[in-house]
Each structure stands twice: as structure tokens, then as C-alpha cells.
Length: 206
Image: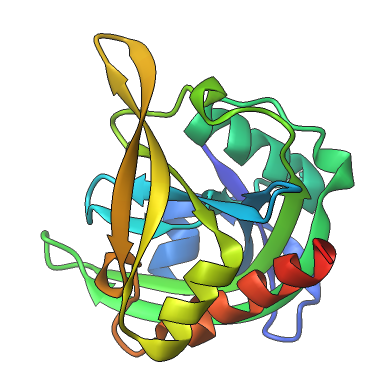
């Protein structure tokens, strides 16, 4: 059973509750959005299997009693199979996220989250990621400046490198990324969702 720390809308700690109750009753909680980048000017996106779109490097709920940096390290390990020195992760922003959706069984999933956006330097290689195949279609390494350019223009294509699994072996290939390949939810824009992260990492690499 998974428990999450819960808060009021101002971020004051209230206690903890089961995850299913948190989303049933629209309780405020924390999530972690994890981004990896390298010194060569690249950023790493996961390809979500359910959408086949590019999203954060990893992301998920912050569990009860867990620090944000601990959650960062855990999500990176769980989703992409890499052990990162999460103590070096840096905060980019905290975003309030509100979403309600109707589930297949007719129930309403209510999300009220403080999304903590963090990044961390990655000094390994693309083929070191042992990602969750049930969740992801692979990991993509993209030049951060080129990614920002097509997101700002909302059009265009760029070359990128993807790692994927074949017969339980990690392989890499060159692919082409278009603007429409980035995951953007209804009511969002790509520049609002990814622009600040990309600009932050560009500054770190100066």
C-alpha cells in the first residue's frame, strides 16, 4: 500500500494518506519531475509507451516521508534503470498541477499536485539505461538548444539518438524528432511545459 504526504493548497503539511484516497478526494501532494542532461548540451526524454510521445526523463509521486532528492533518485532507478547521485540534483521550479479525468469505470481521478521539477548531470552513456519496457518505448538524447528551437516555433524536425531494447539488449539508433512528438496535455502548450527546463539546462551548460 502506497502512502503520500498531503498538504493544503498553500503547501502546509497535513499528514499522510493512501494514494488512491489522495486522487479520489483531490488532496494536495508532491510529485517529482526528473530531467537528466549532459555536458555536451543534450537532454534526455523518455518515450511514454501509452502515448508514444516524449516526456520527462522520469517522473512520479513523492512517497510519504521521502525527500524530493530521494524521490528523484528512486524514479530514475525505477523507470530508466540507472543509479544517479541524486544529491547533486538541482531544483528548476515548482508547478501547481490540477487535472480531473473520468476513468474507464466511471470514477473521477482528481489530481492536485505540487510538481517539483529537478535536473541532474548525467555522465554515462545512452546504452546504460535499462528502462521499464511496460512503461517506456525507449530513451532519447536530444540537443537541448535544438529542442527549444522547435518547441518555440511549434514546427520543424531535429536529429536525435534513441536507445531501445531488442532481445533484452540495449541498442541505439539515429531518429528524427518532430514538434508533434512531444507530449502535451489538453490545456497546455509545449513551451509552457518544457521551455523553462530547456532554458535552465542551456544556462547550466554555458
